[in-house]
Amino acid sequence: MRNGGSDSVSNSDGGSGRLSRRLRKHRTLVLGAAAVVLVGAVVVPWAVADSGDDEPCWQLPASARALADDPGAATKALDPGGDVLRLAPARELLAHEKVCGDGARLLGRIVEGATRSSGPGKPHTVAQAGSAYAVAAALHDTEIPAGLAPGVARMVAEYVVDAGRASALGSDDDAISPAVAPEEVQPNERGYVRLGRFLAPGEAHAAFEYADDLADADADMESLVAELAKDPEAFAILYDAERAYLAYYLERLTDRGGDPAFRASPDKRGGYADATTWPDNDLEDLADRVGGLMKYRARYARDGTIPDLAAFDASVRSHTRGVFRPASERLDTRPPMGDIARRPVAGPVRGDLMDGRHQLFTVVDSWAEERNVPTQRAGALRQSMDDSYVRALWLR
Image 1 (cartoon, rainbow, N blue to C red):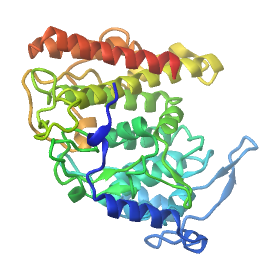
Image 2 (image 1 turned 135 degrees about the horizontal axis):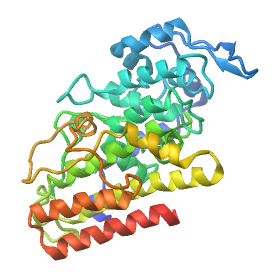
Image 3 (image 1 turned 180 degrees about the horizontal axis):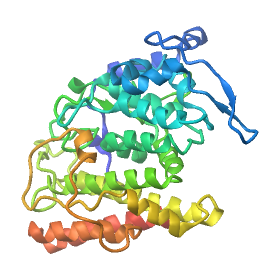
Image 4 (image 1 turned 180 degrees about the vertical axis):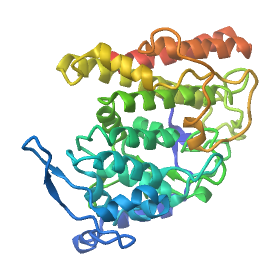
């Protein structure tokens, strides 16, 4: 199910949005060249060292190593600004397919420090959200070193709502900058917010769906997840985040599986939409992403990227935190995205972890039973998620 219409239009002012897009598309090449700047006095030079296997690797400089222990400086270094003119430092730091020694692991710590919230209950700032966009854009079409992959996966999990939205949308002209300030996240008269449901107040959001051809900025989340899925620890982090998101999402729906913020249009406009429209879409997209993870796993096993599937699966399971269950009663709290991914587990994983359909529907079925969701509604939701999962696994 995918309904558009008036609810799919950004809540920002249409005139100013169009003007911003025109300005973005018509900047001169001279302005684009200004992207190569120094950020926070951190210089990230190229260096090549012998890795011991006759293949050159990139040496992480001391100035960059210091960022691993200084989240504030890391954010300042990677924040691309409102119009991505400062993407060059992120690319120079991250876009290396072979990194010497412990450099890739340290890069992962830099990514985490630059993009994560300052603590439990703390929303992301605009600079942190912009830095998350910069990381994804810098790594576009790059083979990510194994040591870096878990750190990047934690960044994606930290922005689980934004990453999921971008995976569903691809590039979106309604996104006019790499980050959305909290004051720009306002529901329309029907309670609809383009960025998602149940958003934390005061939180900035990474607009991974933003693209700028002139700056060569494209944070393609689907291709990034596909690359990360080669690494078992990164795979486990992403899979955990989606299952935690499912529990968080279900426990905030009404007992009929609807969005409690939905308001019927007083003048009958957009009458196709009801309280279940966007929950259906969101949960279909979630099932699609889990199916996508399983698709990548199967593809990599077939082409030899994963040489030993049993060993890969065992490693994923060892890194998986556990299972996540919705609360038995509806919650009206609005946690920031980082707290969603760090949600406490409800117990150990049971059954086949790599049967994504089973792992999802066990949660949906128990939620429907505990909340006395009408049988017809629960069945329809389950079927639409199943369709989306299968399409992702076999057809996409």
